[in-house]
Image 1 (cartoon, rainbow, N blue to C red):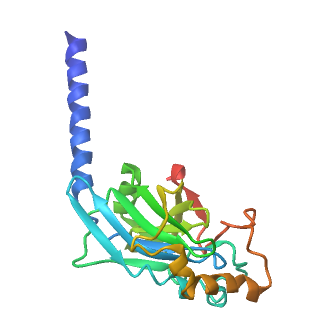
Image 2 (cartoon, rainbow, N blue to C red):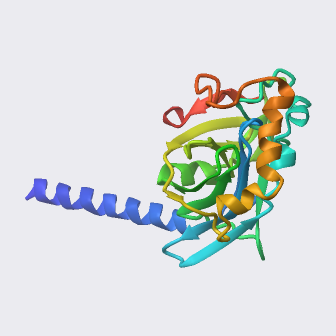
Image 3 (tube, rainbow, N blue to C red):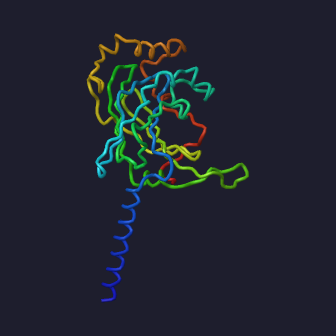
Length: 251
């Protein structure tokens, strides 16, 4: 009987903890709303046609706008004002060099369960869908209050890690990081959730080629005097960041 009582007590405690965790996940972020930013190698520009977050339990979809401004933010000369040694092939991870997605309507501080990004790789005219599922641990990190550290080692102002950075590659693969509080945490390496024969607006590769974006994307490598096709994968994907990249397992 004592063993049975002890088992029941342990089970009740575990159930209470699970309920507590579930309640915390439903609460909004205590600080700024979540954001999504996108970076790409300067020599492999992309164009984003749609992005949104989805929360299944609360049954909402939150569109993001502002992510279409990828060409200007990824210009080689502009990126080098932030990272002077940038080679054009890596990921320049900074709020200054990224297209930043803002929520439509009132700011939603509840976290999505998944984020979707529909985008076009302009160097090879391929159309991809990237999906990232936020794990309970990532949601916990985003809601956890930290403090900036002063130069003397003391605590500074409070801060939160609420910005998700997506890095897109011309084969449809994507990398995801979490930024905030002077930290950059690597979260995932994603395969494309889907490859399509046209973008989310129904625009095909032939129509894109009649415009200026693909030609401008290819011209970047020509102007820099480098070969961008075939893709030198040994160079592509290097991270340029003012913060040291940390691993999710270290958190």
